[in-house]
Amino acid sequence: MINAPSIANCDLLNLGKQIEELIAGNIKFLHIDLMDGHYVPNLFLPTSIVKVIKLKYPNIIIDVHLMVDNPHNYINLLKEYGADYVSFHIDSTNFVIRFLRYIQEKEMKAGVVINPSQRIDIIEPFIHFLDYVVLMTVEPGFVGQRFMEGSLKRLDELNKLRKNTNTNFLISVDGGIDYPNSIESLKRGADILVTGIYTIFNQPDGLTSACLRFEKEMNRI
Ligand code: DX5
Ligand code: ZN
Image (cartoon, rainbow, N blue to C red; front, side, top):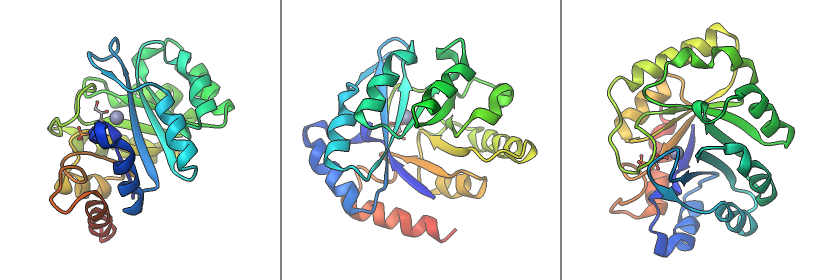
């Protein structure tokens, strides 16, 4: 189980301090949402956020979730700034395979993101090129939404597709992750849980303790 807190949930006025608290909570992976106000109706963070985090914490794995039109425009900078994983929405490019390979040629892991309104088998034509798949369990663009009904069934379908095609891409679930749906997601083959306000942030015991508590609970499964 990889716990990947989404920094979109951080208190922006205390971002540095909160990242430190996450790391003290044994976090190895950070999920960074980048929104351009076109692909999704919201704006969030410049690419340079990757640079400042990586400079200070070189061992943290940075997983960038691009919610942007023309995602190609950002790859060179993300590489230069130290991103490790980059995912993009399938409908944000006309050439999914070429783009996956482009990211991988730059020695980053490449993934696609599936929206709740998209079929799971949309990935079949390029399934062998994937390092990971991000299954959206909310509509992208905003934090704090509730995990959508039907998402676990979709996860089953994705996991089955992975087995049937003998592929080994990682599955990340993103949106509205809480304790009960985390347990169900892990049982259904999820590898990465993108955590937010229902598990890690806004918890009474604070960020560090919430991370350790979540990890302990999930490792029981
Ligand atoms: C939604 C983002 C998610 C979000 C997850 O557009 O992709 O990564 O920040 O955090 P919660 O589950 O708190 O909304
Ligand atoms: Zn995300």
